[in-house]
Image 1 (cartoon, rainbow, N blue to C red):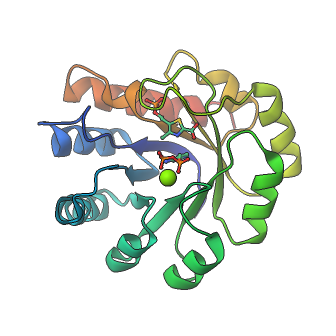
Image 2: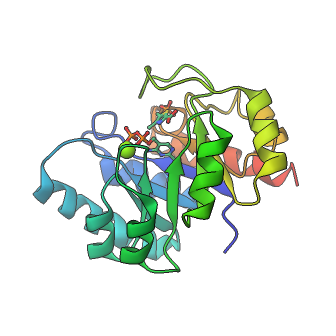
Image 3: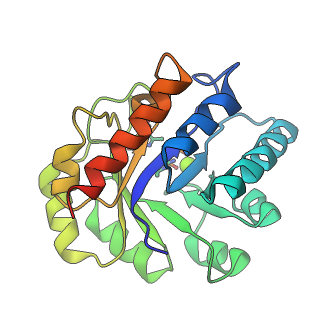
Length: 209
Ligand SMILES: Cc1ncc(COP(=O)(O)OP(=O)(O)O)c(N)n1
Ligand SMILES: Cc1nc(C(=O)O)sc1CCOP(=O)(O)O
Ligand SMILES: [Mg+2]
């Protein structure tokens, strides 16, 4: 499966009271990867919500990715996204198997991405490219770095951080495969607008290849 398209990421605060409706609206517009990102330590709720997302994703033929938690991903039989302090990639690959999608945060460092590729990552993520409501303190990355990464790396490149329909085009032009978005997608006022935005993100990627 080619990893290219919209990578929707959930946010428990932003989606409070409309979680499944907004996620389904995004899936309806087309989502390549859906990441369940919940930074709370409420394990029972995390399991319950992740199970619901797995069911929804299977209906829409979208791949579910769990943020931070390889054990939960293994329990559900889905993929995982690991940051630099979320545990090593090699044991996660051993736990989840060769077919699982495993992503790695590489901030703005191509060397981290090369290492992640050696350790079995399925994609590497660079960011933050713009001001982010969700994670304002994330280290910054540049378009120039992204262009260099594209020439050096042979696995899918995900970009993240403050991405909207208005600013995404240069990232795609520099070789991004996956646009990872929270607010620029789920910050919409209605489910219809979420679906419209999802379609428009996909159009940006389609029109560039
Ligand atoms: C697709 C994607 N890219 C980067 C991140 C950030 O991961 P991390 O640095 O571990 O930070 P948290 O998201 O865990 O706060 C991500 N989650 N997804
Ligand atoms: C979870 C996360 N990681 C980032 C990084 O740069 O590693 S930026 C980010 C938040 C993405 O949300 P939004 O689209 O609302 O900016
Ligand atoms: Mg993390």
